[in-house]
Image (cartoon, rainbow, N blue to C red; front, top):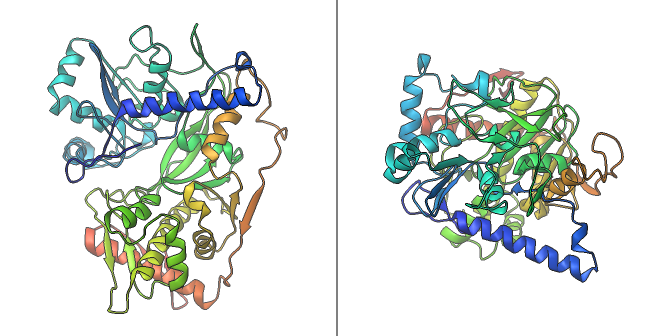
Length: 480
């Protein structure tokens, strides 16, 4: 999907392009099924998945204005990286008791941040007259990207269904993750929480957000299972909501059926991971293709003192500092593009290390391995570097797009389909490759990795005033 940058800090996408990509995907899938001599009448249902992260956009269709939560100026929508709501966030925090950005966490599991949907809607109401007028005239609809897709697929203005599911709703800052319903103290809403819809044109069996689908695709069904989708964040599955004391989010992972219990997760959201490679390619011209970065980084073998903090859209977990900006430091005349490529990959790994450290402290369940997915996992150097920095095995499935796999798995287990049972060992294990740490956890290189991460923390703290905590033991520095 094309991204637009009309102003500094603004990031937009076209919701019409999003839904067109869905139509194109359905058409190509049907063509391939036909080539396999599969009768299309045997299709039992659809399973929308917001492969765009779970947050926003806006579109006008006739007299109806549909606000997909991270949205603004017609005809484009804002996405999760957009920072135009920063002043709105500051105003809301200042109105909160004790000016506490975590004031809504007991209900929503989320801090007040530019990342989430409610502040996007507030910005729209305050700044876009067309949206405000549509709300006053009762012809506006608000929802996450999944609800936009479902509304379009189920009829649009001709009887389109306005629904969402708990995994997407829990990202709005308006949803109570304990009652699994909209919180009327936060807003009044008549959007339904999805439990299955059937009409003449569409049979909808399940709905999941991108990260939730990836959890299913990685078969993260038990407490302590953790996965990292390179691009947006890490998840650790927990049976009940766990209040984070270390900057993580508490979110609804999934609810696979009307009568099934919800599964929760601790999430460490990352603003920039895979996007750092695109930045090196598109903005700086350092690489000609995303695949080239592995070759350059391997040629360097080290960043040689070059440090990269890719805070292009602020810092998410565990800092939640929207005013942060990117930093590259430690440059010398010896530094070349190979070292920058290595530093970029290293930065992605250190972000993951910080989040997993926080997860271990919050959950009390030490992670002994990390499952990974997403496009960046094709980079073998990155996978090995991640294992070395974490000092635990990194497991990469042969099916890198776990989000798509999870969609298929959830659809097959849905009520009325019942092809398989996700609560048993009915499904075969995913074929995978494991990257084991190649350094001694107590050895020199491991200590160097900890020291480098500590240095990155100090760089962030000095540049942006973020709080960090360090503790010294046995003449070594450990990150808290």
